[in-house]
Image (cartoon, rainbow, N blue to C red; front, side, top):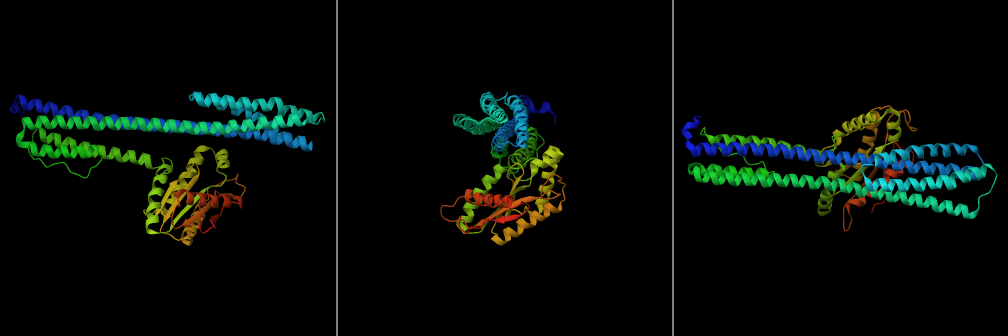
Amino acid sequence: MNLNSLGELGNRLLSTIIVSALIIVLLVIASVAGVRFSLSANIKGQQALDSIEGSAIDLFKALVDQETGQRGYSLTNDETFLEPYYQGTKQFSQNSKELIQKTEKFPALNKKAKKLIERGQHWQNHYGKHLVESTERGEQPSVRLLNEEKETLDDFRNQANSFSKKIEDQRSVVRNTMRTRINLTLTALVVTLIMIIFINLWINYRLLKSVIKPIIELSSCVKSYAEHDFSKDTPTYRKKDELFELIKNVGRMRTELSMSIHSLKLKVHYDELTGLYNRRYFNEFIVNEWEAAKKKSENFSLILFDIDHYKNFNDTYGHLAGDECLRKISECLQPYNQEPSHFIARYGGEEFAVLLLQRTEREALFMAEEIRKAILNLKIPHKTSPISNYVTVSIGVASVVPTGEMMPNDIISAADQALYYSKENGRNQVTQYANSVI
């Protein structure tokens, strides 16, 4: 292309197109980077809160172990009860340090953690230790002391519950921060793209009336792309000039933006570790499908299951092996993930959900048993499991035809109750919710 033949206006137009294309590309890159950063910050924040929650649970369990050991020793004078008492004391001290360290980046949680630890230490120093020593001396504690000890322990439990709620509040803060950042990033991208589009329209209309029609078509395309509608193709323009270059650049932008948006949707809807749908998308999906099933009076089934003694597995083989275990189970589930009638998601840490549409109770129960056997047949070693040498799962199944005021949470609760019965009755089994009406 001979730039000298374009004249001053042609060169100005070409410069405007190049600058606009560069800004668009940079905006897309910056927006993708900004969204990635927001998602990464949310993931790290949620992981940190998961770790804090785990330490808090361990701290609570440590004090309960102490109280159980102390009470057993006080009632029976059996020194074997002192083992969990002393072990709980040691564990409480270790968990206290971990909890304080992990909550340093969350001032509100740090303050709550210190208060929780303080209440636990108060019980240890003024009641637990005192009652153990009194029993060793053969003394009987007073009713007043026992009442005070119970009040202190109840206060500790209340503090633990309050701390758990504070963690959930902090999770909401982290999520809302992520949403705000992403919304601001996308809004800035859309606004800037629209501004660039209108600037180009104005320049092209004044300088190139003969090509205004393809430019208007191009504007319509870019606007659709900004709204994440990539169904429109870029206009056909065969002249080898600056407009041709612009259309080509927009076509490239369309491809890159489409891929970026698709990638972002995958990150939002899919669990990174297992490749299955995540809990958030599951919650959206079940609401939509529930309403559809209610209108058509169709069967609606839900399978919930989790890995038996998964904490023991992690403690024995390590978290990397635990992640690999989740991946193998997820791969095993893929043949059952037949949309739109079958939908599988990672429901929680080691818990999975299988949503079945237009399937009877018997079909749901049959699939649940197939899943249980398929996972057992993976023969993933689990030497610390008290029920099997291999990894097993406990499963709960619920089926219903949605009617009236019934809500998705009803079938989730029913499947969860069935899962609970499977665990209570020995694990490595399938339980179907018995009531015909939820």
